[in-house]
Length: 266
Image (tube, rainbow, N blue to C red; front, top):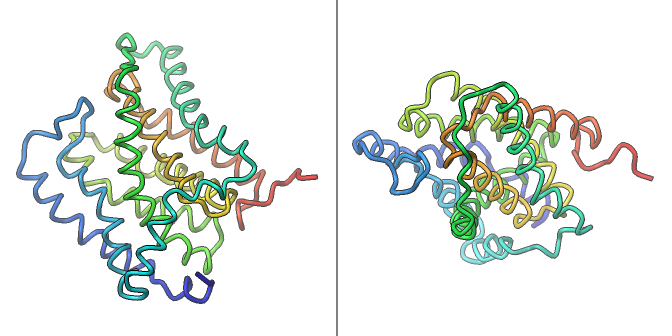
């Protein structure tokens, strides 16, 4: 799809439609006391992860009919775009490293933490499940919205705006999961923005690969769910700061305009 067609997409329409499609899930979540039948603390409204995908499909169909939807779905496994393959190391291991460092810092700070119980046999199930949810999110946020935003703004601005909107979309489920205000501010105001900047960075350096950002997002969710235990003692203040520091380093090294021009490239 050429830049003229991408520029005609309306990120605002996508944002508004995504929020509208999420509203029924929020309402159901407010009426259902129990969360989802999973070990992690996830409210029913977390099922709104499908909203970005549905919004992207609706808007894509209006412009390009079924052929546009077909092209969008083909991007899920566009792994051949990821070059050089060394990017897989960052895609797969960067976020687990940040979460592990976060846990280590909490231990050094003598935080009350349970003994780690890593359910190794369930990791493949978590990986597949979160891969599906990441597909639903990233086909919308990156596959539809980000491409048009990058035609207008810098990569950094795109990441910040997407991070803020994406974070805001999660506030209602966070409240329904009984997280306090400080947790929500750190998670959605700091971590979500820094994480989304990293996603734009990955995307721009892998030939706009949706598979790359889906895998990166997948590793985020898997890392969170394995944080001792089932995410119960995850601290977004520590993880958010570490991720923000990583994002600042990325901005310095790759530049805010594209996040794709390495400062020390030979």
